[in-house]
Length: 159
Image (cartoon, rainbow, N blue to C red):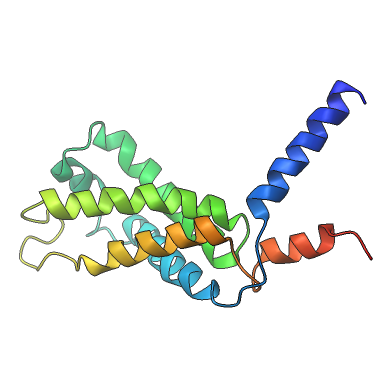
């Protein structure tokens, strides 16, 4: 076997492991619980001028807020799409976990929310629910109703 062939086989094996999932139906719920808020919050930070992410990143004390904020928005959108479609859902879960850890940290350290100082702080339950759901998808995979499962069905040899 040539080196190129061995490399392709190893890449294929890695991809198959990342996309591996069992035919669970219940994993649709954590995918939606994690995917919808990630996608909506990412799009909100882009399309609603009153809700920029950079002031929140600065208020939380993260370094390089001008660089971190656009990257975080892109990661939220990508993670949300991957989770909702169930396409590379473990990658979506992997991306969603640090986003929600950052959101939890921001909830703990920000006293007055810079985007809406007159309003109450957003509920702490949301980042916790998204964090747990993303971690569950990372652990279990996308489940039966996902593009990852369709990929696995096509990759299985006929018996």
